Length: 101
Image 1: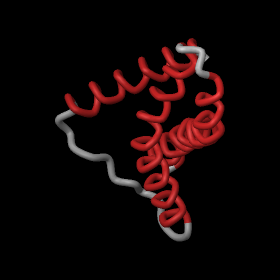
Image 2: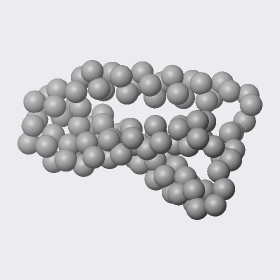
Image 3: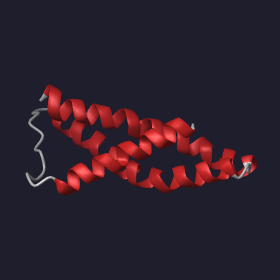
Image 4: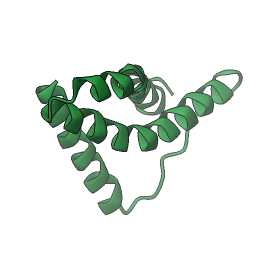
């Protein structure tokens, strides 16, 4: 879990640095038809949950480090599925935006 935390932190840091230093502006989604609302649903849920998950990860991680496993378990049961969803949908958004359409 420490490796997952470090890897995710490095990814988030590099992602934010890249997007805040990028001068080209946003990339427009080129898909048409039913795939367009599907893409935007995935993008919106991914973005909203990515914002929510950051403090949850820090709380979950700190409780584990402090060996407060009773409190850790209470939040970890929510943190893990949300973290997995954000991770998988991030890859899906990337593929849909840059590889498929």
